[in-house]
Amino acid sequence: MIKSKREETLNVEEKAREFKIETYRKLLEPFIAAFTFTLSEEEKNKEVNKLSSLEYRKTVIDLNTFGSDESISIFNKIMQTFYHDDDYYVEGKLSDEYTLRLLALISELLLQIRRDLYSKKTRLIRSDLIEFMLKDIDDYKAKINTYSY
Image 1 (cartoon, helix red, strand yellow):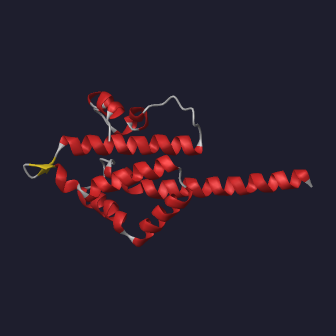
Image 2 (image 1 turned 180 degrees about the vertical axis):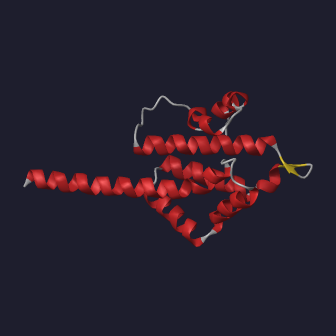
Image 3 (image 1 turned 90 degrees about the horizontal axis):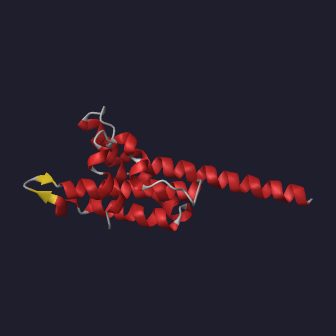
């Protein structure tokens, strides 16, 4: 009786964890596309435009229901940065500050997802989680790791 109750609890926890993983995966898709340099601008824009789709909004509701507080907070900051991107234009072009802010926020989101799903005591830092995406990561590491939002 006790063993079956424990197995049932473990099964429910595993299903919840799998649902969280899938939710985080869907949430990250547009951001992954934005940093995939082999995609055309048209393909990137198509993926980024998913941010306003009904399907994506459903995923965000799942995040708000099942995600960690920290992940939700950082995700909201990312979206507010997108919504207010016109604040970051300089001479008709998005500023380096905009890029830095998004890199810092996205890497922080990845760090919070990692903490939520795997290891609250991770020793990784923000830049470790996006190093694979940026050829010139050394130019950004210190700024990403210390960026305050």
